[in-house]
Image (cartoon, rainbow, N blue to C red; front, side, top):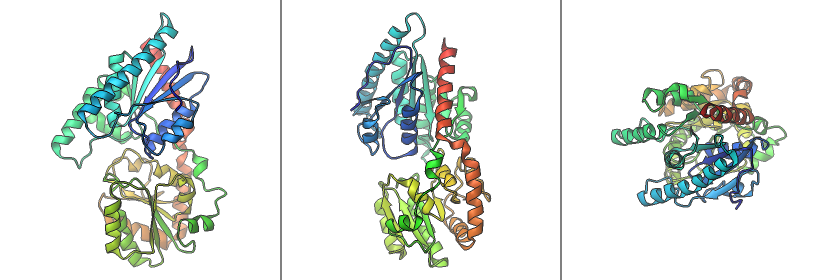
Length: 403
């Protein structure tokens, strides 16, 4: 483990807090940011749970320090949450003391930057108790959503309003989340910034990939059209609907085949739907993969059946690969997928509509190529290095304003 050391004198110490390093956009975004901050100006520290597929990557990376908080878990567990809060307060107090010592009579050059709902609440509370001068929270999608029961929705909105009082600035990866937060009175618009969750665009371009070999390695036939979805198998991503979509597409395009990349709690439900569908031999469940950049360029269409989202990075990944997208029109989706130009958006739950759009693209490869090319032309705003630069600029501005 690359344990936290004292921050280098004169540099801005940036402490990122995220609940768990599972394979996901918020986690990859956070690790990329920590690993690419300008080392002449910034010193990074990651605080997180010691479990998750990306933990090994964090342990190996010597460009930032890492400390683990075993009691920081996603579920609401009062005893664990209290322990996590106490642990975070202790760690952040040590960082505040070190930053104050380095600053002398000036403002401590310390930023606390939280991510995800649980770490966002506990991390911001701990930062306030510890006396951190600047606290930032990134919304990668809220912990509440329209499909929750009213009481649960109100509870989580209330928590976000409370945590916003301890927050210097809010970053969102989607304009839709800024609009939602402002409309619900969680935060004022003037204390927000839109910073896209970036990807390494060139990495997803598909350059140098032998598609025939790559498709065969996935267990698919390179001579047949391939429709894929990349997502954690959890209620938010609604993967059972992808199987239902595949059933309709398969009936109309008999040569079509399907790929689902990811895993999670809904895997049994997906497998049960597959047993009922008659898609055996045409639907591959690939599980978790760390080589998504070689998989997306193999697809003819990327599908996503999420019922709510922040702004999924799989959209710009498909755009960078020049692949059209068919997805449910959740709040943020139009910010990446231009309906009718780079892909198609249908109402959440419209299985038949999503299937019809996929059939259209499979039946008209030139249209699919034009849409893919249009997506590639528009993907520039999702560049990962622009994301890091925007955050660095924000860090320095907020410290100046605090002084």
